[in-house]
Length: 319
Image 1: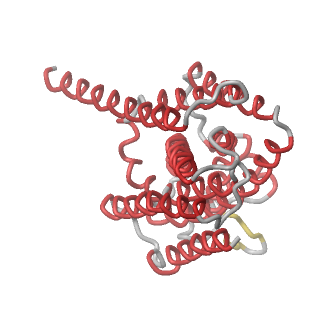
Image 2: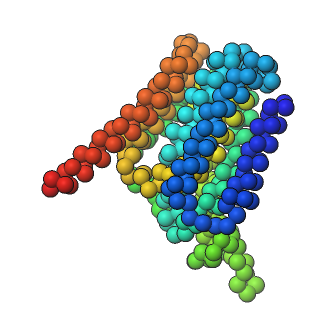
């Protein structure tokens, strides 16, 4: 329990430090700053694997699935990589939302801050229910597995461009229940005109990003539950990946078009994890193999994207 309290306290402290000190004044996050913070959060996540090892070695946390310290570390790193890789799709949609509502770059960090805050709360709730369901109904793992395979097939077969958020039913529903101003007014979420109080597009974007993350969590939470049902590993790996999402967004948002094959990596990861869940009661797939498949899929997607980008650039030069 003490480690749970310490971990949650650290996350709260990091969020308070982020918004209250480092980003008190709205500013555009440049590549250099985004790179530095991405390195910081990835380093923290990797170093935390040492904490996980000691926690399971010294019984600092409950161990309902009887993991050895080494097994716990492997499952933690695998879960972290799954969440990090699936976040790439989330970044695509966040970029589309910011672009559609013309949110200035200097306000995007604050919006993502509230997005991360909501993501932590929603994911904590989903993890509690997900772990409880798997522990109480062993057959539910087949449902989760089938859902992930269905999602992978849907991603493979669907080639439609993402819908403009302003044309979505959700945005139209928000406008029906609360008046929304046409323009952004600085960093304000609400403005008052006469006797009418309006929500600004900035507030609408926060809601859309929260719901977008909730939608993607429907994939990522079952995916990590395929690796382990240990609540501390699931929660810590998931939250540390989410904490690094903001800096990662600013780091790779300008390079999204260059990683066109990453989506196929995500398809392979989702399909593999889904199959792993369905076979879990019959075949024991080693943790090292799961970690290898995920790492190889991501690496292959990045290499293929890089090669394709270089070929395209060469063709333009020769043409």
